[in-house]
Length: 349
Ligand code: ASP
Image (tube, rainbow, N blue to C red; front, side, top):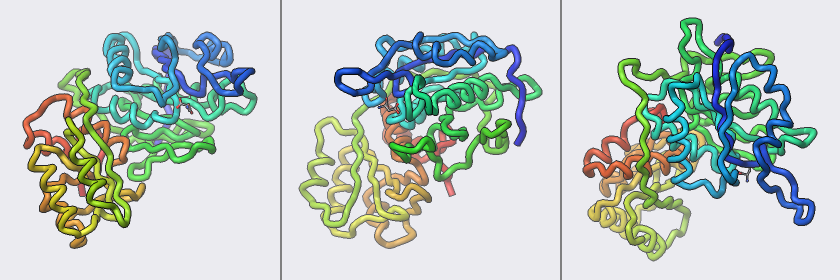
């Protein structure tokens, strides 16, 4: 791990909304979005950066609970349009759905060769104890940092939060309370910020230099998450798997990818598969992976044609399915892509 130089870099700061830029409404007491100018006023330190910082703001800024697929496409469009003009991008985003957006961008910006660093805060930036300043300043520094050969240090979609740089599609929000709000359970940190920012270069993904970055815009929302629990009833499973227009299901199973052995359960899954619905098996455990076939309780899932989701986060499994479904791939190709590591999102063991 080593730290590097940010001189003469240029960074585009994209403000989508979220707590970092919010102020409290004096009448209702609720936090509401405020304009970007206000946010920048709160961080005069930005003027001291030895790199060019330009800004773009969503009008109006949104709470990340309102993020939709059209906002993902908008972010892709902004980054794609400005790709040649900047060395890196920082996306200020509400923390609640940041892991979903980071996952989606990791697929929609194929073969990314520049840093796209998402950050935000748990406390608004004008509050005395805000975590927003450090998150913002370090995220910009990371986006501007190049290696000694001039190439970007972290050409990935990442989340920077509370001194940690994490691969975006490996990250989950773990706390609604602590400054340390994000964690990557199944992949190492890409950098740690203390007095210096120490990069874990061996863990950082590099693009294929022979190909350009390719922006994708098509995503399909016809996905559902079905989380298993003891005593789950057939009528519930049946109703979910028969939602009109449904194309894919993220099955959140037990432990290493296990599910009830009741014949009705396997039959419902088999029926869904035969209707062309793609079923993906991820575990409810945050740490560790699905190993289909390890226990006999996962054999019915194999029989029913369920695809292994390995150690994917739920956020990433959903975003990856939406991305792949948007491409209207033939069924076998869709299964093959879902089973492949496209952007460092899974560890196939
Ligand atoms: N509700 C906010 C959001 O996700 C929370 C935050 O920014 O931390 O937009």
